[in-house]
Image (cartoon, rainbow, N blue to C red):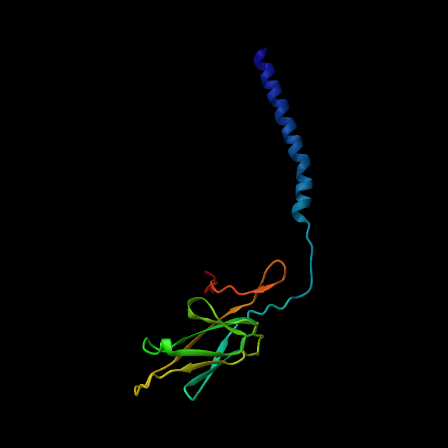
Length: 166
């Protein structure tokens, strides 16, 4: 009699499980077959920020203006190279918006809007009475303007641009 009781309760449990599964199929089917539609469009622009240095030289002074030809506003910094012999003789002058910073860069304090340009930075070159020819190279960098949680703009000079989705 003990075996019949176990077999009977096992059959009742299986029937209860089948009944429960059968009743829940309709609600599950309703969940998976509902749908909705939406209309509209959003334009996404994947532009870039590009800056171009404009340099002129007169009276041993290099006049530097950086122009933002990109699609977005940005921050700009500049570094000038003149070779080991002349590097210490460089004298920086210009607007109060240019200030020396880390790694011998000069940082422009204002945001440069798309299509805008910086105020002039002048780099006077002390030739040290040299007869030799030499180059003064201007390296400029830009970074897009980022905003913190309070809406204040800041520059992230350590950000790296990812290529090919990597």
